[in-house]
Length: 222
Image (cartoon, rainbow, N blue to C red; front, top):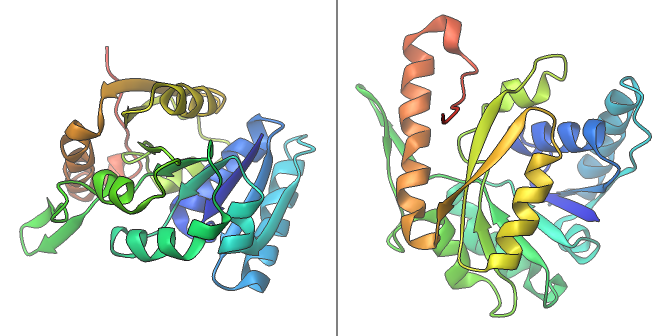
């Protein structure tokens, strides 16, 4: 399977790319608005993965070309770029492709971070509203610490909550998540509850910022 990470040069995109490249044999495609930056990042990720004995293939392209080459497309972009990003790659999407959104709307003030969902109710719902009708949207990977993902010597041992209305797309996304060593996907319901899942991101960041020893914390449900 080919997995594209749109915005794959950013922190969460890099972390997911590195973990999939290290732990699986899927082809990883890095997308960026700047194709040269995407190629450079892809080469770096492939080199890092190879140091762990992986023979993963990691390539880099402009965002639309990256989406065109993939079956599952991770929208590793800030929430305020979700709609424009989907519109920019829409012609590269085909029926049966899956869009996955890890973004969460946040705002920060002197008290800390707070959930700030868009008018659609959640970033995942916003993505679903903009996506082509034949392309299902799944929300996942919202609450993962990018630093912990990218530190390949650090065991993850965390869960990721997954939401979506298309059963097959949810199963595929959960299977891909489970292939990352130490990451357990947990189904949390349909897109209608995505706001609650995304809101957990603010809670975790506030805890991390208040406790130095928890800088890269995650959650595990038992």
